[in-house]
Image 1: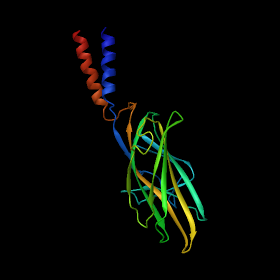
Image 2: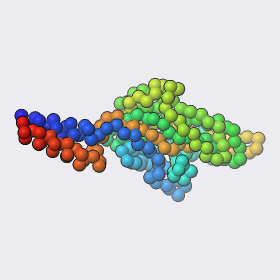
Image 3: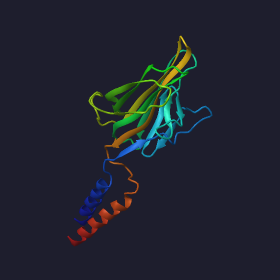
Length: 217
């Protein structure tokens, strides 16, 4: 009886120690190579982001800090890199919002750029969406909150992919490029965190309280 009560008390403490909580992926820990090209995998807090395809450029142009940008080709055309995000413990989460910017180089603004994202649960696509913006010569960061235009909004997922294109064009004023950039990806844990960090003492406290109750039974 005491053993069963003790197990139940500790389990209750563990569940209470891991409430759903939001986190922000800022990309400020991404490694920079000599050119700023990022092709690896980085863990930031509870989440890991990596390049699934193409190449991404990490630059200190974020909102604030670093951001991840489209890596535009030198020849005319479009290159789309795909960034994937998942929890390091394999748990589930919701994708809530991000900041994005559309940037033009070479003095030509007005091109329309876009980002696109897909949410997956065990390999199955459960949501998709995106946004568009007009490219400017400066980083005009735009918040995109996941809402009714993204279908369906805020489902439970365990993997997220974000497409970040970059394009080089030859126009009447010469060759120029425009690209998308993202920063501050906000996610919320859905499944409990496997190893809650500062909550360990709270778990022990809840378990010990249960021990005292069990001892009086």
